[in-house]
Image (cartoon, rainbow, N blue to C red; front, side, top):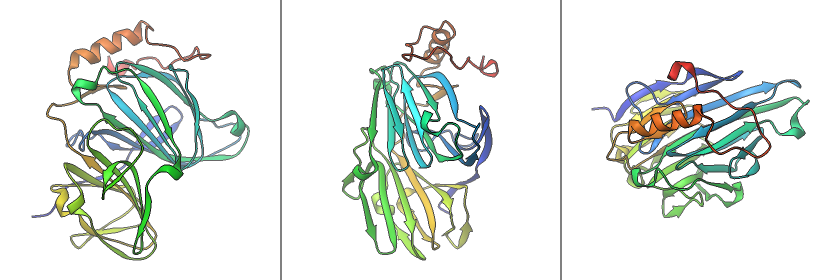
Length: 292
């Protein structure tokens, strides 16, 4: 029996003026451990007049993780945070009972040719923590555990693995691991994984159970303990997952909760524009009519 439960290709989804590749959720699989949403942004070449401008929008019941490969994003939120994220850093925002944030091209890059490439990740909160106070943390790339194992370069972006702990303040047992291969490499890390797990191939190729998979493919394992595969030279992959929650998670627009009533409540609060405001920003993303 194959250990691969699902094989999915990125699906193009429009966010504002940009196309992104959506990995999670999809019809057959709504989450992997506590991970409920992943978008692959870019890579996109942006002209002098092209900018990322996602106006203020709300979240509840989750933490967002932004990880860039290229470019920069200015994050502002209703806590008063103003933080530019650079490649390799982590922005970790916990919405809890409710937060509003915006994501834009920094002023220093406007009017210039630039690139944008990265991952946007949503991690659901445990039910008992869904209404905690919102918070924001910025973790610099040099503070993330990074090491080599033979021909592999590894970085623990979030969670715990191999006796190492990322400084990202997660709220449940999980892992997000980056692997880069200099040359052809064998990988057998199943003993370290737990809960549910998936592999996302950003670039290059991996061979699992004799079959080859390429970039922009997502492989979800039946059993993370059987995570054994080959990486071709110059391949970059991300392994993520963790312990799933005992309750199902529901999602409506930017809201995540274990109870649908909380989604309705959040929608009504946003429609009434009663979420906290971002200092200095007055525009906002309307609740989408397709989600009503």
